[in-house]
Length: 322
Image 1 (cartoon, helix red, strand yellow):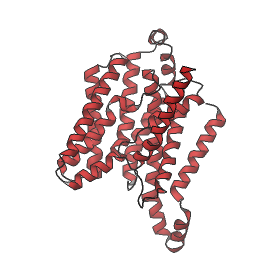
Image 2: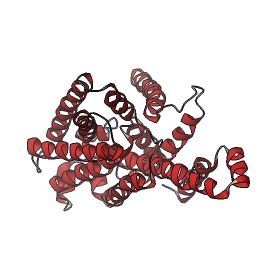
Image 3: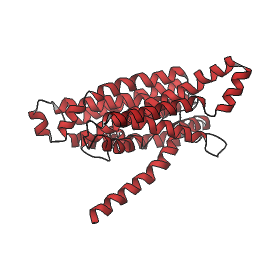
Image 4: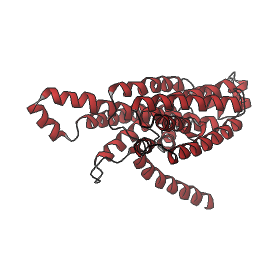
């Protein structure tokens, strides 16, 4: 990625963070004129955690999506293929089911436990030195099983309040999260992004074929294990706090590959920036939805992402026919 492109993305992200904190400006300005302490509390306790979560969740989805696509050599792969997102959702819903009512921190720790259990099951089924296709099949199987169990838990919810809270959490939301919850997600996500960026070169070599990458001194089995574990850590921690948000991990790497000249490993950095930009912009759009209440951000990303992929499929098919 060129320096002007990186500077442009960075400037756009900073602008969106500023808008996330201050927009709309008129109520904040009036509140600061009347009670500056209350205005500062709103900015720090409500607006800042939302901006932090959008920044880090989008960034880790973009970076994880690019790494997973490079690992599986499939431009339509996503972090969901490891099964950890579905496992985190199952863990959160199961916690709400057992408790009878959803507590944010209880659901967060339940989601982390679910993501960890899904990762452990993936490694147990596939083995740490399995082939890439084995990892893929095991991840799809775990996602399907966790999705079915999540639906069953919702259907058998002991209380309508637990059902509503769990269902709302599954749609994905950045609203009403505390600064502590934001840091709970941001620290593991930042750690995962940092170490995924260090895997850019071996992932680029993997695009030449596993034999070529091994001949250049890269341990492919170890690389697979690192990518899967880092993706599970980063995405699982954010899903634990905000719920599942789809399509960002698919869309961001597609744009990022144009900035990295087709190199799958080098796309991790641009995808990180594009993912953060997409989720920050989506969060701002949810506030302007004319529904009388904020639109769940997971619903908005799906509404925007699905038509994009339909267009992409039609475009690729048209190019193939021509």
